[in-house]
Image (tube, rainbow, N blue to C red; front, side, top):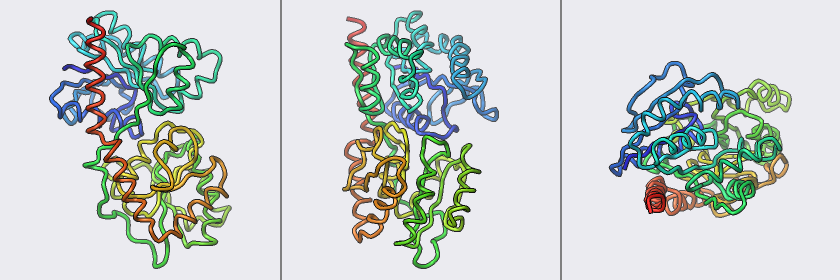
Length: 371
């Protein structure tokens, strides 16, 4: 089968969507299928075309990371999309920005379109009057629709009544994300280490993890390592200093994806203080590495996290966050929760299982489309 994906960002860009699409494509290639990805040339030091883990990657013009940039990229990617899709069996748009060029490709080639709805960007736009009609038409236009969480699926279905959007949790490459040797030096004697693997954007709520740290420190000697970068960094550094915990907060910045398992394995507990979230690939990666997860009760996070693998707290509430983290750190069976997280990912959210599910859907859509 020839599968053509369209996704605005792709590795070495770092993020949940990028990780999901890359590992899904790689697994499909390993199952004997040809996979081409049309993406943006968002990083100037990446090649315009390459084969990455068996996946043929085509990078096209990209003016910038903004809604206007997404639209321009969608239009600018059309020539390459139409060339690559000429003999495709299935066209898969990863996120709403990629649906319009794939619909054009369907009109030219006859191949059906599967759309997957991701990210909090979609949830925010779905609340804006000017976007609801357009997004609803894009939902209705696909031959099949998937969503990264139940919340996203429900919102997408509300925009296009009568059309089904199937929630499918993103997968994890469990052969890579597993407990491994820590890559950070052990903290000083008696100190516990937390990890916050979040890009430093307001929606990810990292501010509340920093605000919770002095409260947690009243019960436990802790430090937090923040893995990720973004526009909030200078404000968060100033906040940590103002709260008197600058010596307990370590900003590691953005790290390459292959460094993440070792960084996660250097901590006892991961914190996801998101204000908005789809189903977090990063949280699943922590669980796959046997790191328990404390997460906000928002979006798709409650679909993957509960008391057996960690705990949930109210979003935007540093006191609630501190209480859950303190309780988890007081639990002598905390490592058992980590092992349970790994088992849950292996049972339900491995990339192998995700790839097989996609292939079954593709075959169903192709049969329906050609009937």
